[in-house]
Length: 126
Image (spheres, rainbow, N blue to C red):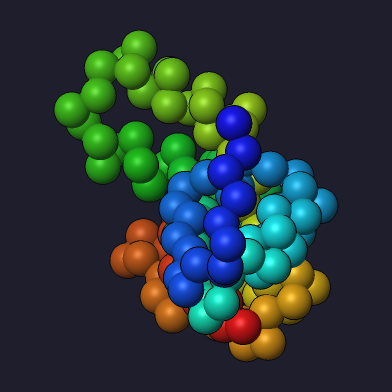
């Protein structure tokens, strides 16, 4: 059921969800959010390192996170790896910012990169 708001929301937040979409799908969703958000949007999403492609990201994800998550059984790790391999499509910092500008946000910037370098926090201002 679609619920329509009588006015735009002040602030929107998306976390660990946009990276499941294609680049064009991300652009379309950001455009829709821009049209319904008055002040700003913040997202927290996987981010490719500079010069890194998706395959290198996946390799780095495995190299860094498998030893960092010893509490997972082999079966649980395999499920995580399968999900990331088939469902995760991170973007570079430059692409996350360009997508926001393409969507209609006037100012876009990364305001935080987690210590592992995997996840960026971005602010998209109207």
